[in-house]
Image (cartoon, rainbow, N blue to C red; front, top):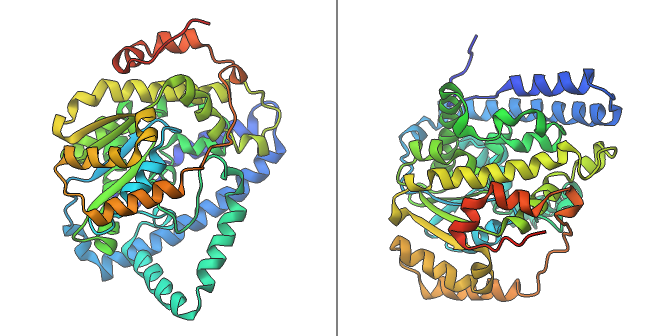
Length: 387
C-alpha cells in the first residue's frame, strides 16, 4: 500500500532489506558491522520521520512551492576525486546568481526546515554564534575521517546526493554496507526500471523545488554531484535545459582514489576486508560504469549546454576556467566575482591532498582499465601506458 506520493516521500526499502539479509545470514557474521548498521539505521528512521514531518508541514504552510519552475539548472558532474568540490565552491561565490544546497539542506529538503534554519541562524548571529560553533564542532567530530579526502560541514556547500542516498537509490548506501559488488543492478539509474526512475526523479525534483522556494526564488539552481553521471539520461528527461559542466580526469588517478574514498567506513566496521576484496574493487568497477554512462548519453545534451573540462587544465588555471564556463553559457561575470575567485584561489594555493592510494593497492590493472575505458582514453587523449 502506498501512503505518500513520491513527491512527498520515497524510499526504496527493498535495498535495505537485501542488505540486512546478507549481513545477518551471510558468512562470516560481522558483529561490529551489525552493531554500527543498527545504530545508523535507527538514525536513518529518525531522519525520515523529521523530514516527513517538515515536508507534510510544507503542504499546509508553503504549498505554493509547487509552482516553482526549475529553469536552466547548472550541474557540475564528474567521477569522484575530479575537482568538483573545488569548482562548485568557486562558482558558488556568485551567490547573487546561484542558489546551492548546504549539507544540512540536503538532509532535510523542505521549505519549513530551511526557513527554520534561516531563522535560527539570524537569532544565533545576534546571540554570539553559539549554535554555529556547536555545529562546526559536531562536524569536526563526525567527519574527521574525511578531512584529507573531502572537507565537510553542516553549513558548507555540498552536493545534493543525500536525497538519493536517503531514498536508498545511491551507491552511497554502500558506505555502510560492504556489498556494492552484490548490487550491480543498482549502480546506474539509467538502466533501472521506468517506475524506479520516475518515482525517484519525482521525489528529487520536488526536493529542488522546495529548496528553491525557500532559498532562491529568483536564482538559478547550482548543483555538484559526482554520481549524476549514472543518472544523466534520466536527469535530462526532467531538466532538459540543464547546463552541464563535466570534469574528466585520467582514470588511473580517479579509480583508486574513488575506492579509497568510499571505503573509508570499511576500515571501521569491516577490517577483515583486504584492499583487493571484491567489495573494494566494485567501487572501481562502478567508477568505470559512470565514465561509460556519461559517454553514452553526452550527445543528449545540447552543445551550448555542455562544458567539458580536463582536470589538469582546471587546476592549473581555476579563475580562467570559471570565466570560460561563464562565456560558454553566455553569463556575465562581474569584476567583483573575479576578485572573489582570485582571493579564493590564492587562499587555496598551498592545498595538497594527503590522500594516498595506488592502482596496485586495490589489485587494479592498467591494461584492464585501458581496455574497458578505451573510448574515454581515446576521446580525451589520456595516455594508456602498458604495465
